[in-house]
Image (cartoon, rainbow, N blue to C red):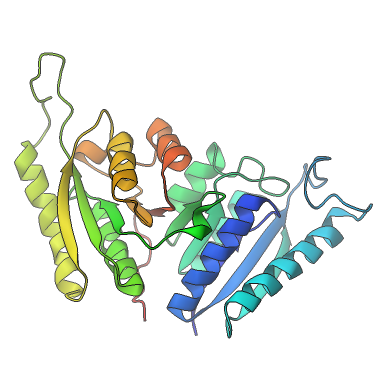
Length: 293
């Protein structure tokens, strides 16, 4: 069987969306779905409002119950899907990063609770999105209800962007949907002149196109087109394009050049994670890109 799709789960509504998203991906790929929760010290006890703090159950027993219910729910919706659940102890980021070594995809919710407090709002975000050994998808509460629109990938000619393009072409093939290759124009100064860069703009676009089109040659059955986008930042440009085309997935590399320099670090990362109008896939540099069925 293919490597599994792993979902970080904490019982929240966002985590439920992540489970549904992961189930669809696992079924597309013909792989197992692993739903994983981590009980970590020193916050092993949940806050009083946490959804699994109920009927005086301990957090471990209550989470085992929620994991079982989540697994049953997706099995009812996806006949034949193999689903396993895992309750582990430790640091959420460390456990997820270790699990990503044997996964083809890691799915997490935008916001967490309990075992994943603030899952993607700080150091854990950087570690998971930037250092996982497989692509990471971040979903919001209602993302599992959509996903049929085109796929948008931000590319700039860097090796990380080429890996992102390869992952995006694979996703477009799996979903039989259109792929949009997005290149960002340099931001203009207040005087209207294009800001200087190490490479001329069109040379940068040419390099980006060459890398992305190389992935296109490997996937001749995928329909794709290119768009040059502008914005105050890489994040705003990609968010605006994704919203305009009603994208089903936005794909970026964890490191970039030119207009997408430092794409998933700092404020740009937070903007994409918080405001992407669709699920966001981050393809870490050096992540394995196993062929999909």
